[in-house]
Image (cartoon, rainbow, N blue to C red; front, side):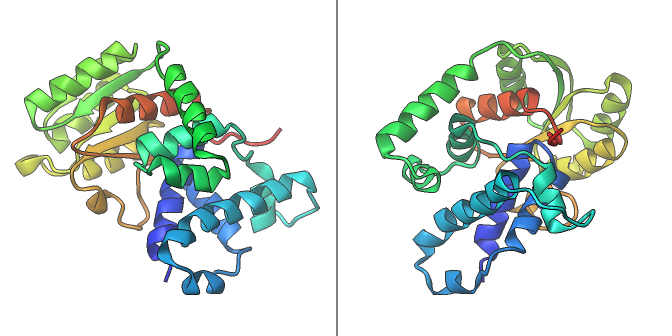
Length: 256
């Protein structure tokens, strides 16, 4: 079974498209065109790079020679969504958000380690630009909340408030309508950040970045999953990369 690899692919495509639903639909549509049976016999280390490469091959092919396709078909979906051609953005997400080793990212994008490192350096330089946007922090540990708020503010993003419980987060979001939610999963007796984000995003078009020690509790494979998940203990660069992608990548970037 390729459950693990497919879940990682979905997580990557959600971050790449900056949209949970769109990323999942791209994954579903591309995977429907791939014969996954040969993957089962491969060494585990070979599965993920080839799966990523196969998805990009099908996605790119849909744009190189677009054909008439039924509305809502897999082909129509892949033709309507632009594949990301910027290798530096791809590599940044793989390494700094998903936590891939640089060697794995190099395999996926089919570049030498030296070239891949150069792309990553370029992308990291781009994350140093001042960003425009607003956010709320959903975190029950005051010191961690303050650390995240300082990092977010240093990137130019205005922090509109902090919440320690689910109910506080929902009420705060209703008042200020942030662009971003930076949420922990476990809020102790205050509920979960996942429940807070689900309720907030049901009414508001806002992007969630989870910063949690419990990524498996967030990435359940159920109907709702966030576009970005950063695992604690986090690196500042991981949050910077997620912020930059969330605020610079147009959501649902469809082909004109």
